[in-house]
Image 1: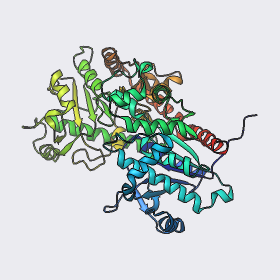
Image 2 (image 1 turned 180 degrees about the vertical axis):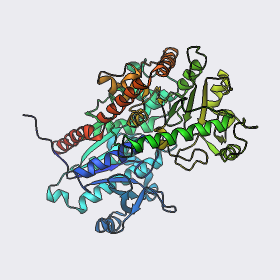
Image 3 (image 1 turned 135 degrees about the vertical axis):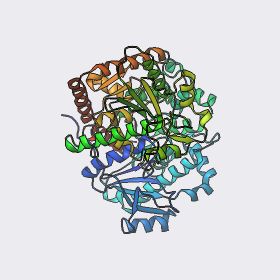
Image 4 (image 1 turned 90 degrees about the vertical axis):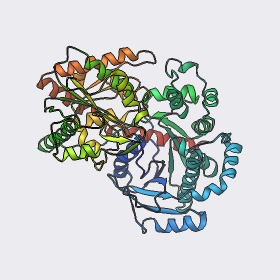
Length: 554
């Protein structure tokens, strides 16, 4: 018989992105919270940084009566300044925001402690290392305070502390040494040194087996982040990561294999249900996308235009933005293309302001004419427009959105929060209007953008260097867009081949008839259903069990 899993009575999770919408980890935590709340109502606490003291945080609603006795105890006995309330996401879990600024006065002592007990090298720290480390230390202190106040050692109740990314490592190490009865989990969503290797244009995958993490950290000036991450991976009760491809990275660069792979799930509560609501949302999104593009370029593209996009962070190579632009250029020159294609690059850059000439045009002034001034490829002005990588690559390739071009590329360089001044719709509200999304990632430990795409019934292209792409292939699909997802083979050396494969896949999609497209959309949605948290949460329960057993058997 399989062993019965040990389950925690309390789970405390620490992340820089709790009530702080920065990147993919926010999506991991905020979409999973509802599932854990249903299982462990208010016994799951998320610990985040409190740097919103002077301005309201729209993601956090403070409740001064919630856990009030502990909050007073933590301040009186542990010197912790906490704000406790609800994270305003589905499930509304308890969020504990801690002021970590006071710990800067103890920084040298904290780093000395980390070196003495775990060999963590903080000597070469720079940039965000200090800020993240002080928050991590504060988060560990918060967890210890909660454990002691509630007398969990006396009642025999079990508690797990999960630290996300290198930014919370010191918290996990603190608990390992100061409060060993707490089960500890460390989740690396991407190794700091692996991301640095990729970001410095070094061949990560072809040469991975030859890299030494410590040596590369010294070469790339990443000693401190790599050191705390590696020591935490080796010290906690349970070490986890988010995909098989990142686990390979961990084995080589951190010299530690993950105990469990915690694949990133999703909740589709906010996706319009198929039917009238979905059709209306899709129609509104397409109308807005086409309207802005036509106003920008003075064109009259209609609803039969194929609308494609790429989104995510502005990591030009890692997210495959360079390959997306290149593939669109290849498509532009392909005589087989018989349909207009409108491609959006939705990547936040150093935006200055929305273009006032475009805003006036959207209000109906001189519609149907090219804008007399400005670039017909970008919706907002940038602070560094002459150095922008998207525009410079398009310049080099001669992509200027001429009226005769069958493929036109529009750069939307702002956060799509519904208040950008041009599109004025959120990313999700626009995503539903896409025909196809393309994410040709080079470094992508998981890949929420393709998962979000298929959740909105939009077929997508990803790569086998993305964790999501590998997961799709594990289901024995992904060979073409008819499956809902096409997984392109990508290596350090095959940029030309991969870009051509993307071009050909888009051409094939253009040739699909209505029934084939509808089938692809249904297959995309079916894949998204398989990635819901109700299917992936079981791996977290395995991680809890491992952490608790290591706690019981040091």
